[in-house]
Length: 270
Ligand code: DGL
Image (cartoon, rainbow, N blue to C red; front, side, top):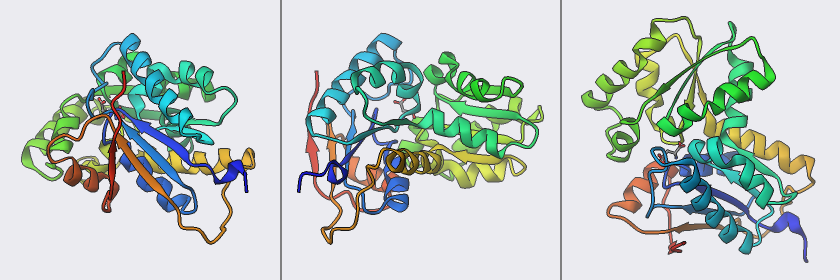
């Protein structure tokens, strides 16, 4: 049967962080085949220029389109912040879901006082993408953004409940806690792993986890395009492709995914 509903969803990120989105997609859409691409050879993107990120993202999208995907999920805030538009143009009419649009919508639905704080990488904060996405829906909302460049390496190190991470988070949250935001958007795909620590450091803030909200937006977009896969008795397939398999990749990846990664394909780009 040649039914596009049976094609996989392409999910991509600069590295392993997007596996938190894959995990949420597996929970929300257990019938969907997924193909993940992580650009582990060139991560981090969060400190790179717009031109470089657009160029790398276009290469990833070309690869995923060649695998015949039915939709794309940009599982990286940094890519969504600076290359979302060019990716949508490249994808033609295919549904493209991104973490920022989903996170902005969820933040507005969560906040009681329309004062939203966002923590993210330098590039995401400098792009102002969250503020633009939030203001497009509510121009009166206040958005306070804080770049947290040290958190990605700390999460990759597995220091999820370490004193160094706690002190770093405390320092980054200072300006946010000094003001009256009631909602904190985790604007980087690495940060959902820090939820317990963030909750204990900022108990009055409601956390918006972009992984869960992106999975919900993906379900909506597929339903709207009549692209949801139906149960045909065949098992769901997951493929994991990366541009490099660095040291300890499996253990780090499994921490993000919450399960074993199985076979990993190396697909260098560029
Ligand atoms: N995955 C990226 C994000 O969500 C962070 C890692 C990077 O800097 O490449 O922004």
